[in-house]
Image 1 (cartoon, rainbow, N blue to C red):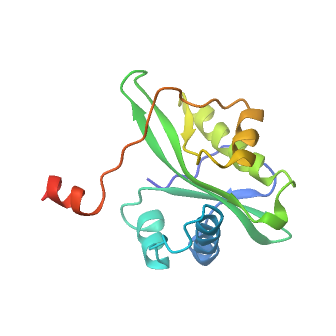
Image 2 (image 1 turned 135 degrees about the vertical axis):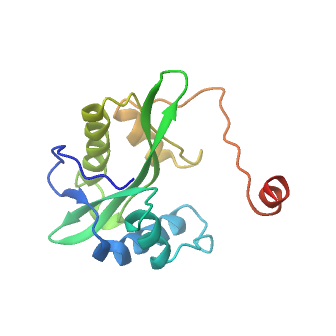
Length: 166
């Protein structure tokens, strides 16, 4: 599903390339630290090469650069809404190095996703945010994003997933 489109991306934002994988993994780990889960990342460079750049990619990554250095990323994939009958984008991870925050790169990454969605006729971009992450919530709301009231996210993992799927 790796897609590079003719969409005009904001300055400093581009689609990731295979050689960006070490930087993307570094940013994923930094996000896990920020989200108070430093030991939760099991993803490897090989995983990212397989699932983002392999024969059957399932995700896309945009990177943000400052002075030629990757300082931010957005990892996303396409979804489909049975209610609207139209695809959308799910933003799995958005992260900008703390030293690069306030430079507009976080907004540029979200702008890029919004442009991709609009150009392709998608009807939404959605994501989850931890309820204690007030700076991010304020940032998202300043862009016009709104929380989905009355919805809770559920997840099957580990033994529960194996039991149901086994």
